[in-house]
Amino acid sequence: MRVVDADLRDPAWVDAVPERQVDAVLTATALHWLPEQTVQRVYKELACLVRPGGVVAHAEQMPLVGLPRLGVGLADVERKRRVGTRADRVSWDMWWEEAGRDPALRSAAVQRQAVFESGYPTEEFSPPADWHVDALLAAGFAEADVVWRSGTGAVVAAVR
Ligand SMILES: C[S@@+](CC[C@H](N)C(=O)[O-])C[C@H]1O[C@@H](n2cnc3c(N)ncnc32)[C@H](O)[C@@H]1O
Image (cartoon, rainbow, N blue to C red):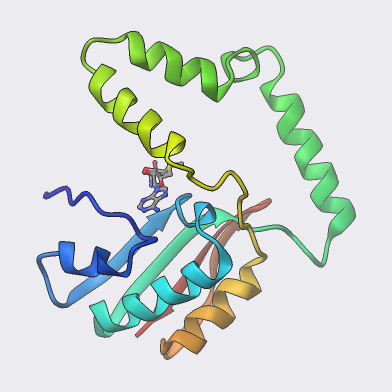
């Protein structure tokens, strides 16, 4: 395994990937940080990077637009599931502060803080699954659809 440090907001991120073609791309709960036009651009870049017949799978929170009442009910179930757990008492800010006190994680936590202080967007873009399907098809993928869903969590896959 190789780790490549690159920012998807910069189209040059593709140059940081040593391979010119890959069989598959998996993203998990990361693209919601990017604005709509950037996700569309990244999908076009993936359509060049993934070989014909290769696959992209994108896992993310994708709202249930056709089931608004059930969506509210599921969010309530999730909220109740967290009551009394550590996740209910510890915010992400507290988690990162604690990570910053760990000698092994301190430098990474400082680096992360610098990214957020540099004006990283706080708005999240979380469209429904259909938006991803349409954007992947528009980017040049031959097939795209939802392949897994549990409540608001879903995986959209596309074949180049
Ligand atoms: C919620 S974490 C998910 C991490 C991992 N995919 C997982 O499922 O455990 C969100 C990830 O998105 C990455 N990320 C956010 N904005 C990014 C950007 N502009 N370019 C590259 N990665 C980004 C963060 O570094 C972080 O690793």
